[in-house]
Length: 451
Image (tube, rainbow, N blue to C red; front, top):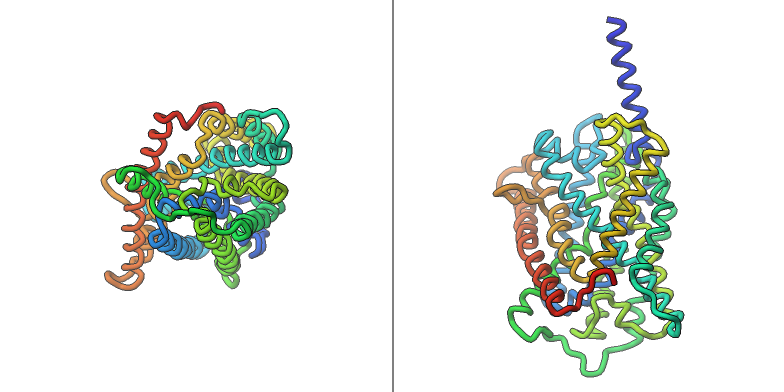
């Protein structure tokens, strides 16, 4: 009996030692403002620069409606995630899949959540590799316009080299300084984008009508633009992991400081998104590029500075989205495959991940198309809903319905089903338009591999 207890205690101690080593559960001393800038860094990324282009494909009325509705719906579903983090007394759902397992069962929860979450987080990291490389190249070309042209591939490799070092930082709290700098940069370059657009003014012969020559292409690009907006509002995939870093007691649950940070973050999101989207579209109309900074060619020093700010921000964003992936990889290797935790394991696995995202980014540097496709196919499922065989399920909303079981036709029940319907429509429509756009551009030879 004593030896059995001793064995059980040893197992618990070993399990605790592993949890103290894994990146999500190793540190729980974050403050509410960590939540604010982590959420800003996770959400306000490359997507904000494509919003004027999305507006040009949506038009004034639908564009404003989609932007505002997305802001409201994603804030609501994020609130649900924050509330559900500690819904069971004495237990914390530190990872997205843990909450999914509680709602849907051990196996089904993993099946529903993990593939979609990985698609989102790995997809973001790949896209941010491309974005970081493009912004570095734009900075180089603006600062040194007479210099020899350098391929985008090499700039992506330069950007990736930073992550081979930063990816060794152990957990969310260790990257808080990087995340803060990234959040400040995101607000700064968003402000530069819309202020420079105001300064440039409404362009001559600007047009606000749909620019496609055929109705079919207009519809497809409209659908693709929905994916752009979905990408811009991504961020739910790391919210539970961010909340896991905040200390919690029965008297002072983590949801209070977390929600305080979320509100601050969403105010910043509104101050970034709405001016950039609406002012950028007002200035350039349907002639705006898929990255608003490309449309703003002057003054050179300001555009160069904005692009470098994008680089700094995307460095932080990459780390925010990579950390849950590192946690998944290290959990499997240490808990299931029994690899010893330590520096060697971390160095090999994380470097391999950075190398993988760099390789895919170099191979497929399709900025606008990737935003739309991943936005519709992956971000919408984990922010609004997720697809299972023959069933469309809204992840935050369906978990809320499954766990809290609100009364039929009550306000909560109706609100969640509206979110589910919007999410399903977005999942079906956005990838169709994005994929059609990608294929069309490949046929027209506008996309080039290994640029």
